[in-house]
Length: 162
Image (cartoon, rainbow, N blue to C red; front, side, top):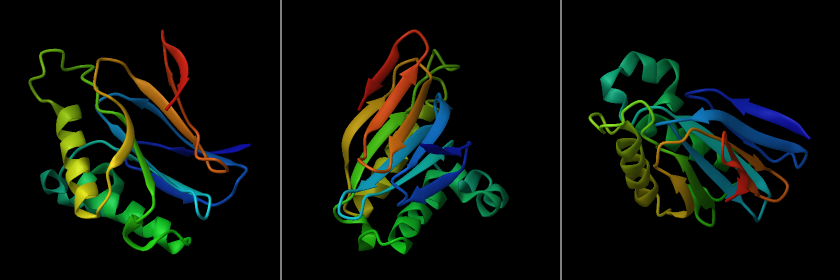
């Protein structure tokens, strides 16, 4: 199996059943994972911040860095490879949104990311079917394109399936 590895602000889609889409070290960042069972296609984005207005130049350079600029592009990319228009019938899972370096929750980046993502998903008629969010742990996540299985790893907790 080959891995399509995403960094912060990256997104990708695939219909190749031998591919796994993966991203590492989600702290306050959130991975939005999409799976379209009718065409066996998957997509993922590694979102760092909720709103692109804080850095419009960065949003043009790397739209996936922000929920509001990246998530619509991920949905569009899934549509381009045969996914349903506006994501109807797509399974959505969310991973991340922790409070790792902000123990006193002063900035609440993880919570703000999740809220922004959910608002965008709702605007597209979508909602998460599963979440592994919040807390104080870093997570690595992958999705197997052939069957939509989402696996999570965190140091000290091991591996589990979402």
